[in-house]
Image (cartoon, rainbow, N blue to C red; front, side):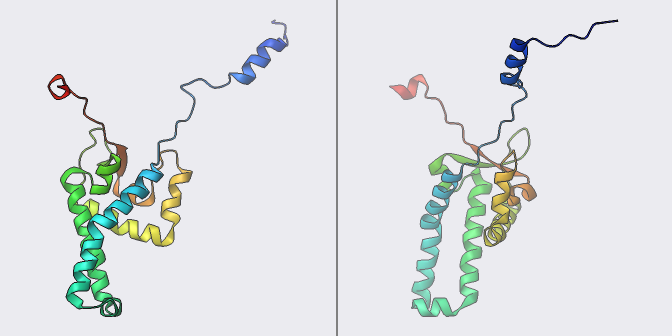
Length: 170
Protein backbone atom coordinates (compact mmCIF):
# COMPACT_ATOMS: atom_id res chain seq x y z
CA UNK A 1 0.00 0.00 0.00
CA UNK A 2 1.35 3.39 -1.01
CA UNK A 3 1.70 6.07 1.50
CA UNK A 4 -0.15 9.25 0.51
CA UNK A 5 2.30 12.11 0.40
CA UNK A 6 1.48 15.77 0.22
CA UNK A 7 2.83 17.60 -2.81
CA UNK A 8 5.75 19.85 -2.17
CA UNK A 9 5.08 23.61 -2.05
CA UNK A 10 7.39 24.27 -5.01
CA UNK A 11 5.52 21.77 -7.17
CA UNK A 12 2.17 23.26 -6.23
CA UNK A 13 3.40 26.80 -6.93
CA UNK A 14 4.79 25.84 -10.34
CA UNK A 15 1.58 24.03 -11.26
CA UNK A 16 -0.37 27.19 -10.42
CA UNK A 17 1.49 29.19 -13.04
CA UNK A 18 1.87 26.47 -15.64
CA UNK A 19 -1.52 24.79 -15.72
CA UNK A 20 -2.04 25.16 -19.46
CA UNK A 21 0.24 24.24 -22.27
CA UNK A 22 0.39 25.95 -25.64
CA UNK A 23 -1.76 23.20 -27.13
CA UNK A 24 -4.43 23.79 -24.49
CA UNK A 25 -4.68 27.56 -24.99
CA UNK A 26 -7.69 28.78 -26.92
CA UNK A 27 -6.78 31.01 -29.82
CA UNK A 28 -9.55 33.25 -31.06
CA UNK A 29 -9.69 34.03 -34.73
CA UNK A 30 -9.31 37.68 -35.66
CA UNK A 31 -12.50 39.59 -36.37
CA UNK A 32 -10.90 42.34 -38.47
CA UNK A 33 -13.31 44.95 -37.08
CA UNK A 34 -11.48 48.08 -38.23
CA UNK A 35 -10.59 46.54 -41.57
CA UNK A 36 -14.25 45.66 -42.15
CA UNK A 37 -15.37 49.19 -41.27
CA UNK A 38 -12.78 50.74 -43.62
CA UNK A 39 -13.76 48.29 -46.37
CA UNK A 40 -17.46 49.14 -45.89
CA UNK A 41 -16.81 52.88 -46.11
CA UNK A 42 -14.65 52.39 -49.20
CA UNK A 43 -17.34 50.30 -50.90
CA UNK A 44 -20.01 52.85 -50.01
CA UNK A 45 -18.06 55.65 -51.66
CA UNK A 46 -16.83 53.69 -54.69
CA UNK A 47 -19.97 51.70 -55.51
CA UNK A 48 -23.07 53.01 -53.73
CA UNK A 49 -22.49 56.75 -54.13
CA UNK A 50 -22.35 56.60 -57.96
CA UNK A 51 -25.59 54.57 -57.93
CA UNK A 52 -27.26 57.19 -55.75
CA UNK A 53 -25.96 60.14 -57.83
CA UNK A 54 -27.15 58.56 -61.08
CA UNK A 55 -30.55 57.98 -59.47
CA UNK A 56 -30.71 61.60 -58.25
CA UNK A 57 -29.85 62.77 -61.75
CA UNK A 58 -32.53 60.59 -63.37
CA UNK A 59 -35.24 61.58 -60.86
CA UNK A 60 -34.27 65.23 -60.86
CA UNK A 61 -34.24 65.97 -57.13
CA UNK A 62 -33.57 64.66 -53.65
CA UNK A 63 -37.24 64.98 -52.72
CA UNK A 64 -38.29 62.79 -55.65
CA UNK A 65 -35.72 60.21 -54.54
CA UNK A 66 -36.81 60.22 -50.90
CA UNK A 67 -40.48 60.08 -51.84
CA UNK A 68 -40.10 56.96 -53.97
CA UNK A 69 -39.42 53.90 -51.81
CA UNK A 70 -39.19 51.53 -54.77
CA UNK A 71 -36.25 53.53 -56.16
CA UNK A 72 -34.46 53.29 -52.81
CA UNK A 73 -35.08 49.53 -52.83
CA UNK A 74 -33.67 49.28 -56.36
CA UNK A 75 -30.54 51.19 -55.25
CA UNK A 76 -30.02 48.85 -52.28
CA UNK A 77 -30.53 45.74 -54.43
CA UNK A 78 -28.23 47.02 -57.19
CA UNK A 79 -25.53 47.75 -54.59
CA UNK A 80 -25.90 44.17 -53.35
CA UNK A 81 -25.74 42.75 -56.86
CA UNK A 82 -22.57 44.68 -57.67
CA UNK A 83 -20.92 43.62 -54.39
CA UNK A 84 -21.92 40.02 -55.03
CA UNK A 85 -20.45 40.16 -58.53
CA UNK A 86 -17.14 41.41 -57.13
CA UNK A 87 -17.10 38.70 -54.45
CA UNK A 88 -18.02 35.95 -56.92
CA UNK A 89 -15.32 37.10 -59.34
CA UNK A 90 -12.32 37.19 -56.99
CA UNK A 91 -13.53 37.08 -53.39
CA UNK A 92 -12.94 40.78 -52.81
CA UNK A 93 -14.83 44.00 -53.14
CA UNK A 94 -12.78 47.16 -53.78
CA UNK A 95 -12.89 47.85 -50.03
CA UNK A 96 -11.72 44.34 -49.13
CA UNK A 97 -8.92 44.64 -51.66
CA UNK A 98 -7.86 47.97 -50.14
CA UNK A 99 -7.56 46.53 -46.62
CA UNK A 100 -6.24 43.12 -47.72
CA UNK A 101 -9.21 40.92 -46.79
CA UNK A 102 -10.85 38.17 -48.79
CA UNK A 103 -14.17 36.34 -48.47
CA UNK A 104 -13.84 32.59 -49.00
CA UNK A 105 -15.96 29.50 -48.50
CA UNK A 106 -15.46 27.71 -45.21
CA UNK A 107 -13.56 24.64 -46.32
CA UNK A 108 -10.01 23.37 -46.54
CA UNK A 109 -9.36 24.82 -50.01
CA UNK A 110 -10.68 28.36 -49.29
CA UNK A 111 -12.61 28.34 -52.54
CA UNK A 112 -14.39 31.33 -54.04
CA UNK A 113 -17.95 32.08 -53.03
CA UNK A 114 -20.70 31.82 -55.65
CA UNK A 115 -22.87 34.77 -56.66
CA UNK A 116 -25.97 33.29 -54.99
CA UNK A 117 -24.18 32.74 -51.68
CA UNK A 118 -22.62 36.22 -51.88
CA UNK A 119 -26.03 37.83 -52.48
CA UNK A 120 -27.63 35.76 -49.70
CA UNK A 121 -24.83 36.91 -47.41
CA UNK A 122 -25.58 40.53 -48.37
CA UNK A 123 -29.30 40.12 -47.57
CA UNK A 124 -28.46 38.48 -44.24
CA UNK A 125 -25.96 41.29 -43.57
CA UNK A 126 -28.77 43.85 -43.93
CA UNK A 127 -30.93 41.87 -41.50
CA UNK A 128 -28.02 41.48 -39.06
CA UNK A 129 -27.21 45.19 -39.15
CA UNK A 130 -30.86 46.06 -38.56
CA UNK A 131 -31.05 43.80 -35.52
CA UNK A 132 -27.35 44.26 -34.51
CA UNK A 133 -27.52 40.86 -32.77
CA UNK A 134 -26.22 39.03 -35.85
CA UNK A 135 -23.04 41.08 -35.78
CA UNK A 136 -22.56 40.88 -32.01
CA UNK A 137 -22.62 37.08 -32.17
CA UNK A 138 -19.03 37.24 -33.41
CA UNK A 139 -17.80 38.58 -30.09
CA UNK A 140 -19.12 35.52 -28.23
CA UNK A 141 -17.76 32.88 -30.59
CA UNK A 142 -14.22 31.52 -30.74
CA UNK A 143 -14.15 31.50 -34.53
CA UNK A 144 -15.43 35.13 -34.64
CA UNK A 145 -18.12 34.40 -37.22
CA UNK A 146 -21.12 36.63 -37.63
CA UNK A 147 -24.65 35.37 -38.24
CA UNK A 148 -24.40 35.78 -42.01
CA UNK A 149 -21.03 33.99 -42.13
CA UNK A 150 -22.47 31.09 -40.13
CA UNK A 151 -25.51 30.70 -42.38
CA UNK A 152 -23.56 31.05 -45.65
CA UNK A 153 -20.54 28.99 -44.50
CA UNK A 154 -18.10 31.76 -45.36
CA UNK A 155 -15.17 33.35 -43.59
CA UNK A 156 -13.07 36.48 -43.89
CA UNK A 157 -9.35 35.85 -44.16
CA UNK A 158 -6.30 38.04 -44.52
CA UNK A 159 -5.34 37.74 -48.16
CA UNK A 160 -1.81 36.39 -48.46
CA UNK A 161 0.49 38.85 -50.15
CA UNK A 162 2.69 37.72 -52.99
CA UNK A 163 6.38 37.69 -52.15
CA UNK A 164 8.51 39.72 -54.54
CA UNK A 165 10.64 37.67 -56.88
CA UNK A 166 14.09 38.54 -58.14
CA UNK A 167 12.67 39.94 -61.40
CA UNK A 168 10.30 42.32 -59.59
CA UNK A 169 12.98 43.64 -57.21
CA UNK A 170 15.04 45.12 -60.03
